Structures are given as C-alpha cells and as structure tokens.
Image 1 (tube, rainbow, N blue to C red):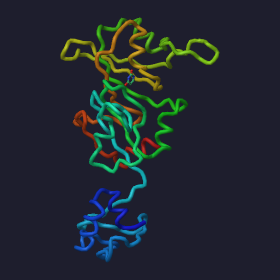
Image 2 (cartoon, rainbow, N blue to C red):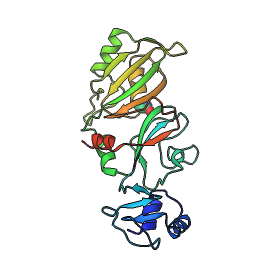
Image 3 (cartoon, rainbow, N blue to C red):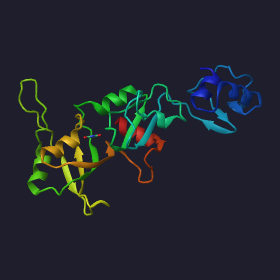
Length: 243
Ligand code: URA
C-alpha cells in the first residue's frame, strides 16, 4: 500500500497535507523518515509513525455512536440528518449502521465497514441480546410482564399463517420513574423485528414514550457518551463482539 493512502485512511491529513508532512520528515517507516509520500509500505509489518507516534493499520473501522433522536439510521436520506453525517470527521467510506434504531430512538449504534460482523450480529439465528431502557405511559401489571417475557403477538405471521410470537424476553422494572413521572423498564430482547419494542408494549396496551438502546451483545453504551457523540471501539470490544 502507498504511504499517502495509508496516512489518509487514518485521517492524518489530505493528500496535499501528507505530501508536506512527508517532505518535513514527520512520517517515518521503520524509524527512517520517508523519502516520498508515494513510497510503498507493508501496512501489516512496517512500523509507520507520525510525529514519532506509531500508527496501526486496521482493515476495518468500528465506531460506537450514541444516536440522538431526530437522526435516521441510514447512510443516505433526502430529508433527515443521517447517523453517518454525525461521523463527518472520520473516513466514513464503506461504513454502515449495524441494524436500525427508529428516528426517535436514542442510544447505542455500531457503525462499521466489517460486513461479516454486521451479518453475524444481525443474524436471527444468533439471538444477540439487546437491552433497551423503555419509558412507558403507565405501570406494567404482573400479567403484562409475564406476557412480555413469554412472548406476545405483535401482528407478525409465520409462513403457514400462524401467529409468530416474540421470543422470550426479560423485563426489569426500574426503581425510579423518569423526570416526567413515566415508569421505566429495562427490556432485553434477542431479536430485531421492525419497531419491536414499541409493538411489544402496544401488545400489552401500553405505550413507549422514550426509548434508548443500552447494549447490543457485549457492547455497552458508555454513561458519559452524550447523544450525538461517538468513539472508536477498543480492540477488546471488537474481539468480544466477534466471539
Ligand atoms: N424497537 C423499536 O420499537 N424501536 C427501535 O428503534 C428499536 C427497537
């Protein structure tokens, strides 16, 4: 791979800036200042550094976004801001959201160009846990909790026309209501059907007034990551997700 391509993929600068940086001796290959920006390097074995800081090449990119409300989980949209618009400072080529959150839903969204991982995490066969913080319009009765946990009819049908109940889920009622006095529950589901959480609550005659995803598999939303903010995943998080 060419050094300037490597450096631009890591967002070190534009091709023009990189040329200048190399000219000024700020980029080293195995400890030696690179002679030209277009020299070929072995991105997997050479030690490339910028201003003395070693750079690591990664074929794929992984970002955890705290999706704010009002933004769509798409790569392009004619009308609304997209989750990719929020990563404008990054090299977003090839990035896609791993699954969708509704426009009014907040919380954890993984964005990556690792198609295999997306496929794995979204595969209905893998039953990856997703935990949602759900603010609802009225308290749940014990019988509602049982229904939600055992499976409810949200209007989906199997191929043979029979009702396709939701898979067993877990409900935990929060001790405190939200600032508006709405009850809060933590709902863990293992599927990702369209508007699933909202439809599950509707099935027990309730209504979601606010929804935030807190986790997906081993990946957890940080408490201090504000809506609209994002960060790269750590190596450990990537490895855990791939397991
Ligand atoms: N379930 C919903 O109803 N909406 C979401 O955004 C995610 C899960």
